[in-house]
Image 1 (cartoon, each protein chain N blue to C red):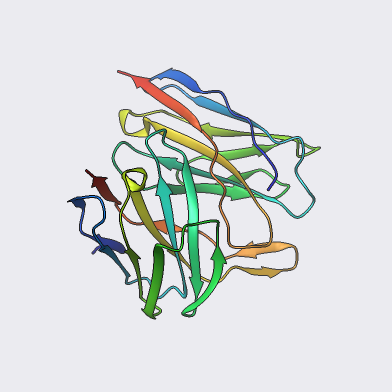
Image 2: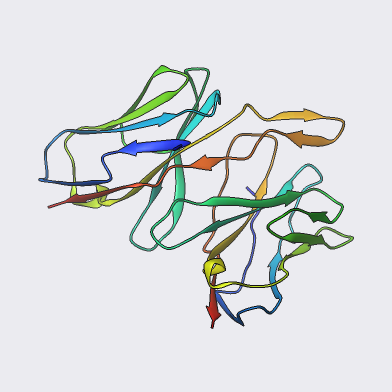
Length: 109
Length: 120
């Protein structure tokens, strides 16, 4: 499975945008970029995914670099409820999600 | 309404015992998964079933035996529990991923709340 690299932790203030980076320089042409998050004491939760084009949904936006070797998850206005570990995952044409260490996001009031 | 549920939520047991964790989903999915999250918070897939057939079996000791009586249930039985089995076990489910026209559909995985297993 192709590997992703994320910062161990990031900090943000409430109501401000947050940009969570992910590097995936060994991504293959068929790998989808997925983001999940895990709130404290809960199971992971799907956030967003994309292949080549930028994607928006009600939770976040995903900006994908033109060479696809990196991507950024954007939370437009962070809330306290967004404090979680965010996982960037590359998923090929199989059923597996391979989780890395993720980024622990702290949101300050 | 709970989408993916697991029982029990907490499980404390002695080494050498046999225990089961149950998982049920009411989302109409045909693929279910078991993940293990260890004390360092690494989350790793263990098994996956699609339409009651085993499709992913990672390097897991054969003391762990998943059983899928129907598409809505995937149970995990663990024999001869060891200290290293202590972890949080998550069940998940999804539709069978479909690839069409360069896009992947229906692949989002929905996770249960986890079962916290402590082996003493």
